[in-house]
Length: 348
Image 1: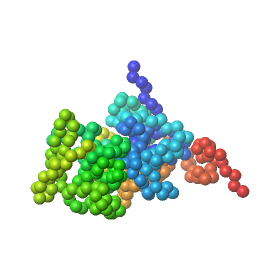
Image 2: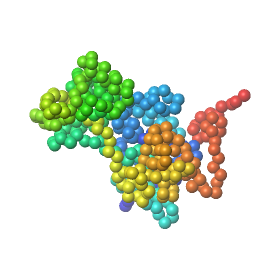
Image 3: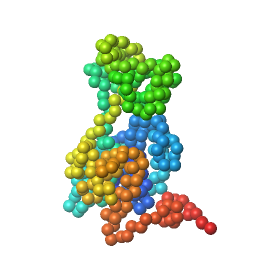
Image 4: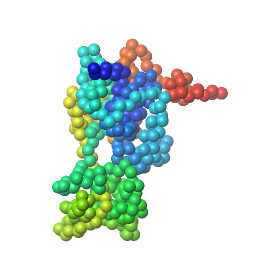
């Protein structure tokens, strides 16, 4: 006998920073949530792509890593008891005749929810692969498209491919820890933070890092291990480079995946929303964070946090159309203090 669907007021699709803060904003309005994410742990891109990379534009936090931001958000939402369903992707979403939303995941878990919040970042993001025939056999062993444990590269000969922030940030971070770092880019022009570019060039000038302008065109493997890569420069000269690990950062290719089949208004692989409520074209379904689009949209965590607040209030009105939803402040509201499990201060 199949388990009964989980009935709830709100389902959040995506456990990245914006999805987690959506839990908080809904919690303040006494709306309980279930959170679904395809990754095995909360955090989204913050922990999947740059757990140790510093973030500088979170209000009142001068600097924190992606992992630290997620840890703080998880601590912040503890009072609201959100239930997480990880390692599964929402495959179908449709509206029932009673107006509620039915969801099914890749593991067969079913939900019937009054509202849904899509906080799926760029969707089902996939790293752009290195297109060299046969090299994919080393993925996860010596070929990596993202880094979870930087210490595994200590004292290794590392080759990093790419010309963006991720490539330069990891090249700089691993220099001095790895035995040697070689950065490969197809041209001597980088789309990265100017400070990172300057730091990279200084490390190269001092001999602590090597920069090669060219492209990987082949490899040599023995005993099922990647031994050397073939690098061809713009003049056709070939260099064979010994290595222990190959890190490739060619950016992400966003894919909406099943979301594209849910009947939502889509604009250039993003979900169109009304900026007064961040509701989509399907009533009761909201979209926040990088997954949505509207005039003037900026893909910042900060912007996503703002969107979750407006979406939460709109959802509260949607759930209780006859009730006046009052704006309260966590500084002074005894009701919110009780929800957060904190003692109300006494002002004299």
